[in-house]
Amino acid sequence: MCVAVAVLVAGTVWLCASSAGFMEGPYGGYRVQDVDVNKLWTTAGSNGWRASSAPRSYWPSPPAETNGYLRVRCNGGLNQQRSAICNAVVAARIMNATLVLPELDTNSFWRDKSGFPGIYDVPHFLKTLKHDVHIVTSLPGIMSKGKTKKLKAHKIVPPRDAPLSWYTTLALEEMKKYGAIYLTPFSHRLAEDIDDPELQRLRCRVNYHALRFKPHIMKISNEIVNKLRSEGHFMSIHLRFEMDMLAFAGCIDIFTPEEQKILIEYREKNFAKKILVYRDRRIIGKCPLTPEEVGLILRAIGFDNSTRIYLASGEIFGGDRFMSPFRAMFPRLDNHSSVGPEKLEENTRGLAGSAVDYMVCLLSDIFMPTYDGPSNFANNLMGHRLYYGFRTTITPNRKALAPIFMDREEGHVTGFEDRVRLVMFNTHFGGPHKRIHPESFYTNSWPECFCHMNPMNPSDKCPSDDPHDVIGGQLQNEEIEDVDLKTTDNIESTTQIEETMI
Image 1 (cartoon, rainbow, N blue to C red):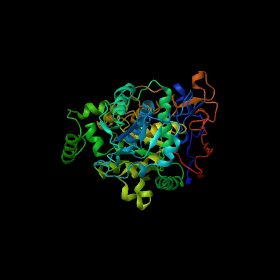
Image 2 (image 1 turned 30 degrees about the vertical axis):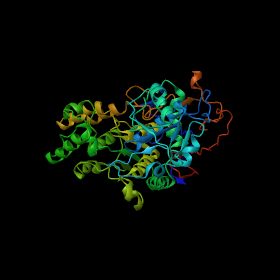
Image 3 (image 1 turned 90 degrees about the vertical axis):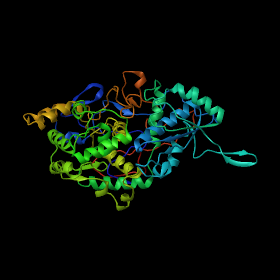
Image 4 (image 1 turned 135 degrees about the horizontal axis):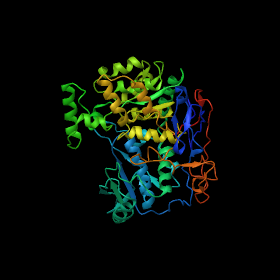
């Protein structure tokens, strides 16, 4: 399969960027001083770190006999479901349960009934995790009164952010009692902060190795990337200026009375009742950036109107009235509708369309989220790009930028771009950095899922086996398939690879 960049299969690709124009920041991140914008097209510095989710202590294969079956329903969008799948595997591991292939919610928003087998490569998922958990595609049949019928799972609503102890006590007791349990809904139902690095590394193995999209999704994504890269570098932007997010954030004052009515009705129907004041929300960074604000940030950093940009977004609320200023600054805008095959149009609102956007953003030279708060898409992508060789990510600090934009709206434009640059250049740009609450583990799995090639701390040492093996030789000497990495020093060239990782 042909892609425009080398893609990580098992482990990560390390593309060493020049550090000229960059100053080493804490934890290996980079702060920009007198930045040459061209340097941002390369990856951030690794400072000796590389991705590794292989176990670093004894990690036995699961016992042949398990305590029962675990069935889960992963609700939410594609990436909310993705993190739920990771949590389900961890839950199955600690409960010694057989995991039933996770169900993906077919809610009214997505209107997508493709499910796990329609989005992900099931054989690859089963094969990659065979030394971690037992997985079946459906509950088995049982004999009852001389007839075979499917085992019925006992339904449980798990608490949000449940600790490991909930699964190993209450949930496990119910599993042993009924033979199978059904956890629904299963979004954010396992605590992110787990004081067990091996379980965190298991999450990474699921997220960055086992969960690979189906070949047709990968093919479409690669076609889009190749088209975009045929003319040089490209940037991807997750433009989260959509009705659901604006209603959730309570940022409605900039819209017409008719549009405000739509947002208010949507909020009352879908979210908890809460009084939200637009100015207060904006000043604390809770409002998504407008398309124009995104353009102003990019222009202040130093990108010009020749920059090619791929937009990953749904329908922009307010339409062309908000997009026109952005398009005037950066006319080379594309999305999967403009550069993708026509057949994708049949499912642009469904999970497949979101999967294609995810892949294109993963492979882009630069990624910029505009609302990373509760956005699982942006959070997961930032974490994936970090794992995939510290690929450059430009993350606007909306709270720090808010007063600058508010001053501009009041006519105070002197020093505007200098102030924006001061905020934007105080960032790690996708390099390794310490995870500080409320940053999600799925946004930053450092240091658990990384190792250091010349460590000062022995616990950071890379496994002595092939660091690109998913599990390595630590699973009771069981044979693990080696996957060759293909790397390139020139991210502009087109590289032939057998498989792409996702």
